[in-house]
Amino acid sequence: MKMDVAQIFSNFIDHWFHTTESFMDAGGPVLWWLASVAAIMWCLMIERFLYVNITFPKERQRWVAAWRHRSHCCSWSSIAIRDGWLFQAQLKLNQRLMLIKGLITICPMLGLLGTVTGMIAVFDVMANQGNSDVRSMAGGIAMATFPTLGGMVIALTGLFAHSRLVKACLRRELSLEKELRTMR
Image: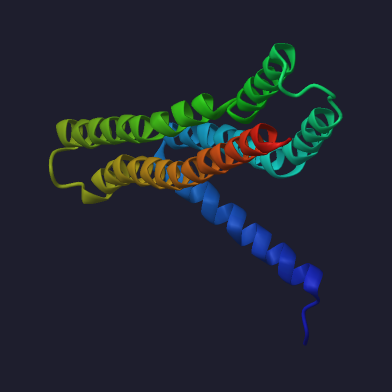
């Protein structure tokens, strides 16, 4: 009996949701905070990638066309206008990059908070029930390690993407500056 694609997809989603939910529950409430920070960080990162690759090239073309149509490119007012455009481009390209970097920095700290709360849970079990209940201690140890793992993974991937984004912004900024300064 063949399963149709919709049924396979539905089973996959159900399994993925159940696995994710049990991972998040094992990691404790700090893992949910970490997931929220990661979601905000990646939304901002995607917005910046879209701006740099889709919106900024259109603005760049507008600035270059306006500069080509200027009759006096060497006058003080023309140079001031060009420098204003370059400053505006720099501001628009670097917008929200510090916020993204701050969110990346928060992730390992939240992971450490999860480690501390998990270890407190382990010590609480040890104090209340003694050393014999390994199963209860395992839940606290999982609650201690999952947020640390999550925080580090999110921070490392975010740091990689952030550095690529900063480099792309700098390349576009320098390219615009070179094109506006070498015309005429």
